[in-house]
Length: 261
Image (cartoon, rainbow, N blue to C red; front, side, top):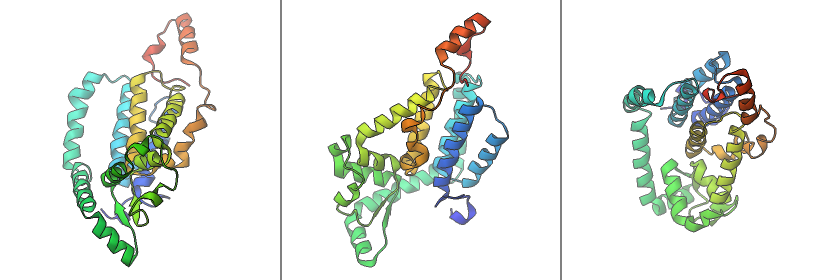
């Protein structure tokens, strides 16, 4: 689907703009206690106009998180929400169908990598690897070096690095800073989330959202993501256990709530 029919906002493509929107609405829900107010509706409309597969997948997780926080039982999700989402995913052309096409394109480009890279080196331009192809190519070449990373200039070490355009943000981040660096970022991200969410289930949803966004775009290198390295130090809602002690005195169970300010 051509970008002229989709909302790219201030970004270079709709998918990248969708990453900002997904992170934005997630942070909005954390701040306002998971209420669908005017701001949330504006962000939702903007997300819909991106027509981005990655954005939609992550938004589905955000809605799941929203519903679970607001009392939807997991059995209801399994019995009703999951089947509906599966039907939509297979019927909408830019979801499962698009993912299948991207996978096939990546397999072709990986098989013809040497020939294609040679053509681009001779004629100019870049060979754009999609999400899966980027992940497989970097993993196959760097292998165990991904444990600690190669640095920001890792593409200079790749045989076809001068003509490659990597689109998978997760493997790009790991190639630069290693699995160790990714785990450190996720650890700080979780520390931030724990300021707002008490349930490990909800935190897992948020981690999945970040990793899926990163799989589709270089999201982990955005300043809006790197800020999680220190943002938890500046977020200061009430401590859950302190709130729990207060709730016992007031006679209500704080564990029925998912977020707190």
